Length: 432
Image (cartoon, rainbow, N blue to C red; front, top):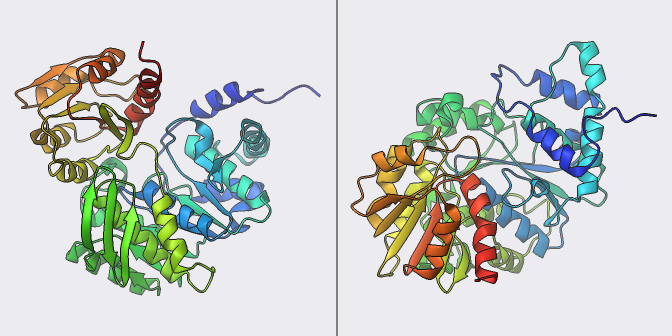
């Protein structure tokens, strides 16, 4: 039988998936539900935890995953975007799926296309297709205990919002993707609250009193219990480039290696989620301590070199940049350098204004992904006295190694981090 697929190996498969339409105006999840039905409703065949929020989703997923792993609980994760390889999106017990599995899953999802034509239903978008691949994978995985599912954007109409989880998490609410989610924090919150289901506990990293009241009113309408752990302040013993130590609600000297005060908050959200699920899983206090300590997350204040100190961070919106800025300003380094690039649809001027006061030099550049901002536009937005443009990322990396500041950070986009990260590691290991 001839090959009827538009791809036949892993490279052509991923290229084909990546070429599918990215965004479409949605008014319902009817299409996604139809796709799932044709695939046997795989979303109903595994236990899940659902995670949304403006920032911190990936970190919370990683904290939860490592706590489960320390308790010998088999855990799947569905996350986006990836830093190194497409396969990272779908993982089992911390290991990304193989190229062979990607190809097999893509073919299974593509097999419904002939029926979609008969049903006069449009083909899945890029994220819908990827989500369906994950759902099929997890539905067929033996000995799987729980899957942590991260949304793509928002909540209410996100492709992942066809699952019924055992816990719903909203990490935080800030401005991003306003063209999709709304122009006020209340509108953005309302969209994210769309993942909350009846009688499913909701854990929320919201601190603003007004937003908490909005959330509580919504929780009443869906008759579910809400938890707001960040209203209880932790006692921070230290927080530096190598991690933090803190006390929280009876837990003494919790330690994490992810840098930044915001990572303490992400750890607390994960911890509170585990507490709400204590009757569903056998997780000890030791599992919580060790799981938090074991957590690493690519591209989030990630140290790629200590001599010289080079860090990458994928903060890509005003809230993420603000959290990094508040951390960097307290770092005790004599000279700090920022290499900045971001996507074109972001609040570029605000992001630059937020971060540049804490650096002695700012270099504006551009990554190769098609949505990047023009470096000359970023330069015009910057008010820094020591700013310049360099579009040659390799030469920037050479300069950072050969003429380093005490602290050097590449920041502004996960796409940017994905591009510079292997270049920095290659330069580190092959200095000549």
